[in-house]
Image (cartoon, rainbow over all chains, first blue to last red; front, top):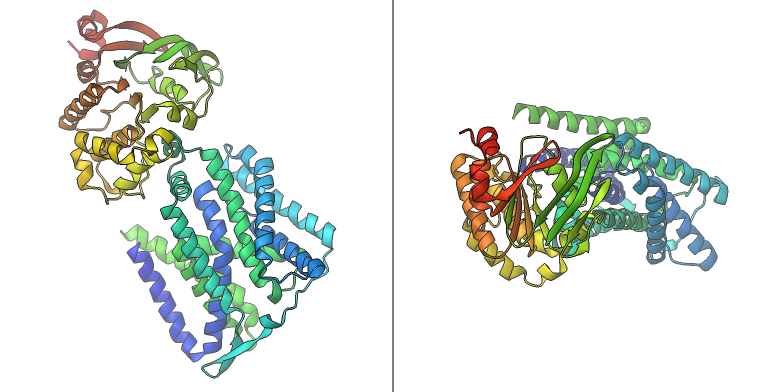
Length: 304
Length: 234
């Protein structure tokens, strides 16, 4: 645990030093990275507790964005406040998807689980496509476009909400896992489902609730990013990819590590984007840093 | 208390338990037999982890065949599995608490139960904040028994409690089991170490190839010619 933390501090320090030369990249990366972590946390929960890599993860985000868009467009709901409506709707959708597909194959081979979430992903994207067409939708609120001056540069003020929200969500998750009976049950199931069953935990129920709650948590990221993105059916895919990368980089079961790796990768990405003419390389650097970290960690693990 | 009637279990087309009947009253009962005799299969079936192809399991007069594991456990059957099945990232204290937290009638007396466990295994009290995964095999086994006792079980099932333990700890473990028996908890244990097992139990069954071949009181089992030759090496 301590060693992993040191690795991240090293990377963060490196990035901070580089970012001092380019403060804009530092702040922009911090904001982007927090958003990535915010989206990755529910995926990590499902992976750690249910043992399922949910390839439809980003599409639940897309779904949340469309629900928010409808609430905004039809009923003039404030995007951030609409969170309280998106969350229960996503909970029900997550529950329905889980009960109708994932639970049925839970005991079979891992590959089947992966395939079924892939199928769910395609179904969701096509469903969204047929319901709302592929035309990009936008939500405008005035407060989302304000910017502030920090160290002589102008950056978006609204995006600092991502940073606050990712820290808040992380703390709430850790507190629930540590302090509540359901949280301890979920933590136990994640470590040893057989052991959990023999102390009287209803493992199936824990799986169902965890999946549905994690899906409902996507409402936070959906409503926060709503005013700052163009909403279209395929928006979720890259976020699934990035969420998985953060989880892989942090290591299974390491929730604070997700925030650290999110910020690390976000800043690395932003530095590249701030170099004129090389912004197209940002994805390459994102995955390059990921590969470096995993290789470095695996290598050190072998030495021990 | 526990009554198994004409139970048959199969994995696919391979039948491993044949028309087997045993009872456990307010006593300690042993299930002896070689590797692959079907002891663990039988226990997994009592706990609802595998479904039998025929037969019934009754607990306190209630048919529990086909119940889910968590439902069986909440009725008052606690299991100490061979592989211990602890939560390695949780502390000793959290592991113990998990034994009572999900069983409504045990949850109310969590502190009392914890003290009861400490009187039997004082070593656990000294290790409360240690992570379970970092303990030795013997300590983990004690924690597994302690966690099972947290559930206020009427019947404690132990699957091979002596496996993988050094001889001195095995003796200690069986002394603890006797103590638990004195506290009024019924015990069903499977064991390959028949010599040690016989000291704890009141009555025993010998199971071979999925069938009961001998059933008798513990002192009579020790005299049985077949047991002497096959299990005691005398």
